[in-house]
Length: 277
Length: 295
Image 1 (cartoon, rainbow over the protein chains, first blue to last red):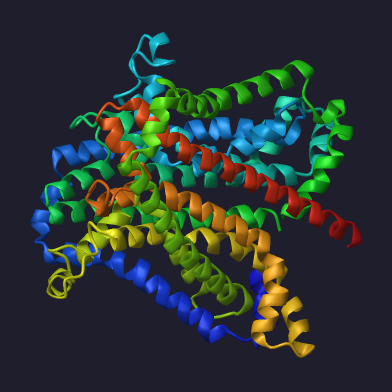
Image 2 (cartoon, each protein chain N blue to C red; image 1 turned 180 degrees about the horizontal axis):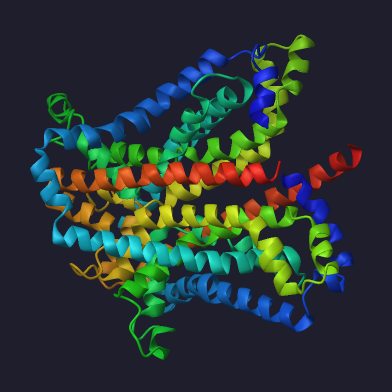
């Protein structure tokens, strides 16, 4: 909508500063984003393809993809379930402490990831506050990794679903009720379809963030080869061994994956916005 | 969109009729589930940080945060934030101005590229600068000939932090300035103000809360960044250790109380970030209600 309006109104914008603001923007992102990121691909091209393939299809690296993708998917899924629940409770109900809870949801964005990592590890290690009551291991297992990824991804779903839920027209719920649907039917068949694009966007954002996450995971993961090594950690390990070609090859795989995800997220956001024009 | 929120809010409790609300029992079960999850997941770790920080008494806490290595880490972290946040704030304003006040080809591609640092792993954000500026990197030889150190030194940390925090201010401002349009600025120009005057007296007051919020988010991330900085810093104690890296070293040396003492300082900053964010949201909401009524 804004785009169409813009086409008409802004074509001959009278405002000054177009050249300097766009020029500075282009210069800045070229130096800081485009040039640095393209070195990954330039660097990958200089290494023989067979060597690149050998690195990215290595057993230990493939195990890390499986772990990273699996744990991130599971974490994003948990985030959708609890994110929608939390958004629902915050928007629809009034209860003491609601505003504080609402403010707290963003904590994972504000708290440095390394601190989240050491705090969660301390809580869930075998003699930790929570770990001692569980008869299974959480810290230093894939479960611990999922836990850390759930922590850092939680605000995404809440914050994408919340504004959509606030704008859901209550009259359609009343209409649904007056036509004989019970509350659960109304939620599943009327409200949930409205929330779906936003929930999926939140899922994709949380998933993308979880795939690349490093700080909160390295402490709780234990970093055992083949078992609890995430892909970003492998890049780090290769760098520490001065294996730049290996690190770059894995980074290229991750970057391509990120680009695809970014594209999907853009599509989802476009879909979400379309529904609410 | 944010403006509509407050109005919906105030009308809700009245409208809780049977047809569009759950039974009392269901409502309370859902509230307890949500709040319980958040307490277990967010509050408990936060509380744990502060309790562990004072585990061995306040003497250990004070020793940990006044240790020379800790102090130099605090200093370096502040220097990095002071370099990166203003630069990214200026970039954010410039990018938002170009993207929202004018129309040009490739605009959505530009917005996607601005978003890109959010989508990539922090480890990769650090790696790219190693590939460019380390001894074996693209410009490595040239930098060595001129005796300039970027990787394993402060400039590398600043560059990696700049990349990771690049979108924060722009991301806050673009949607805000898009909804505000260009009419205010056009009026100001018609009345004879020049471009800078229009920007300072018309645009800036309009975007001040969004700008402030973007700056706060950017600062929080710049201070807390771990992955990207970890790649480029080289972990030289007293020289290239930021606060998160210092915490990692203490933790890996089993000095848990000291690690959590330094961590509690950063957590305190995180709490302040959240409080300021909520104050800004409250202010925006308050300033928008009369406008809604008028229109």
